[in-house]
Image (cartoon, rainbow, N blue to C red; front, side, top):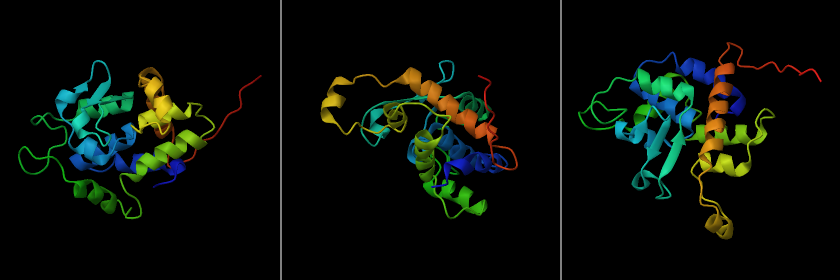
Length: 194
């Protein structure tokens, strides 16, 4: 995983990469989704007007439908994509998705063989836990990653997916990544007046 403090600078470099695989990596980072969920995404799963991506249960690790709120940056990326069939990220062969190696190849071209696409989920989770600018509760962050609640009793009573709070969380993540796109990759904190 890339340290969360470095992901914004990485995103700036990623946005200079050409090709559909680079766009897939970008969406994976913006949504904190698994690479397979991104690579196999179909246009039918997206409601761009509602800024929502609904991944069907059969494509999820936990076999439960997962609703992913889309930040303004994720929406802009999707709206910039050409529609060449049902797959959002088609591979070289007609009707086939990008391979997982296509996403890995983007990182290698960027001379970042030290990280993986899946590692950005960890970067996101570390940002959730460690960033002083982030005050979202643990369960909101875990829902964003489509993780199951470990406490079976709590899971039995908690039926919602915290979509409104996750919408704010994913926009905060995208905003954080955008702020860090400066050449230095650092953020200057300003104190508020009392």
